[in-house]
Image 1: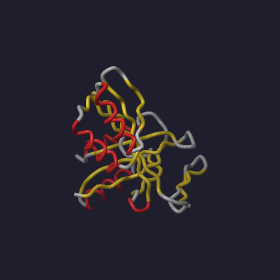
Image 2: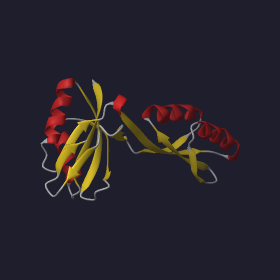
Image 3: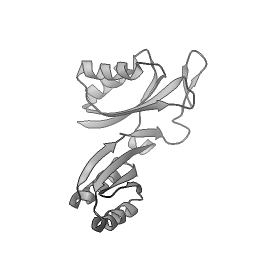
Image 4: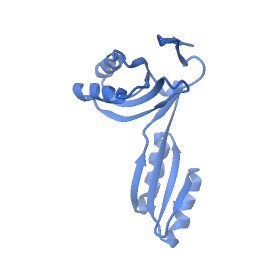
Length: 175
């Protein structure tokens, strides 16, 4: 089993994520994470999907998602040619004596303390999945009350990986 990150450019219309996730569901494919948001052109959304499978399954996923009416472009974001980031919000139980230790770990990872209450801290951390996993592992001695992760968002490096959607016909042109 291998992990693949696919980036889609799709019409920014209602139901597009439902149709994409429905295809995965109907075929029995798993989505590890999915992120979506409008692009610089409000007619289109950029969707990043992380999934697992063998070569044959991953090839089928790419072909079948690419055939969806709303999907204008799909491509794999290869790790060596892309930048991936994820956001995590972590609520940690922290009495006054524990706060300094938690803040010290957060500082090492360049994380931000975004909320402090009497009994807890909320930490915001952005980075690749390995960085977030390492941070969570270092919090092992503390009680994590809640954890929210966005999943991967990614872009290809450089100008070679830019896809432009032009005109009303939404023709894909790779720069």
